[in-house]
Image (tube, rainbow, N blue to C red; front, side, top):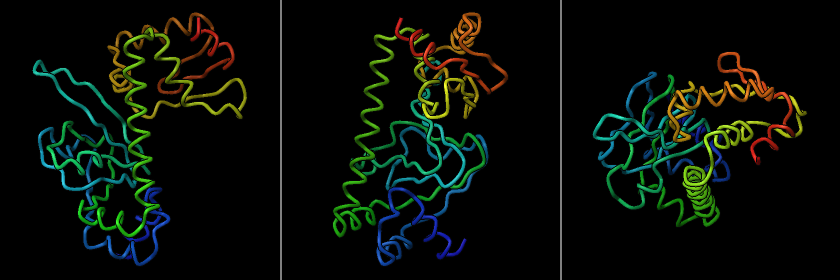
Amino acid sequence: MSQIDIAALLHHQPMFHQLSDAQIQALLPATREVRGQKGQVIFHRGDPCDGLYLVVYGRVKLAITSAQGTEKVIEIIHPGQSFAEAVMFLGTPCPVMAQFLEDGLLLQVDARSIDQAMSTDPAFARRLLAGLSMRLHSLIRDVERYSIESSTQRVLGYLLQCTDPEHGLQQVVTLPVNKNLIASRLNLTPETFSRVLHQLSDAGLLTVNGRDITLLDLDKVRGFGCS
């Protein structure tokens, strides 16, 4: 891919779209493509991290694996999002494994060029800090869910996050990845996740057709989750 293409891709990433052309050009020598196929590992837990990653297309799984081989999905990164920025600043090994969930393209931007962009553009630094703050808030919310919410509340909360209140009371949520990954993300076993969906279907709140889940009445779903 040519530098012009990479410059255009950087410009379209939310974190970088307000940078000037000169600032984007300054990032190009420190930016490399990372192309991968479904299942390919981007980095392992314990690998060094010297830059952040931007997802152009495809999805990426961040996960940890226990000594017994059990995998816990920490986060699923979608196009337009970034990851590894916090570790980049610390200069410590990666605490998680990153893996392509589907064929994808990433851009890795070297840490030193990010430092330079932050020093020349305070607005860029604020956007980067805002992204890190949102991720921290999300992780705290995850801990709260795992600690005090039932399995049903976690599933309903996830489904409601995928809806748009302006699109009516009945909505179809298409799961972006398979149910096992979502179950791990919610700190549930796949069996528990499937059982909860079956119970909600029996209660008349939703129907399931593969990855398509139709929420039949958002108001009832919200009320059920609070009960």
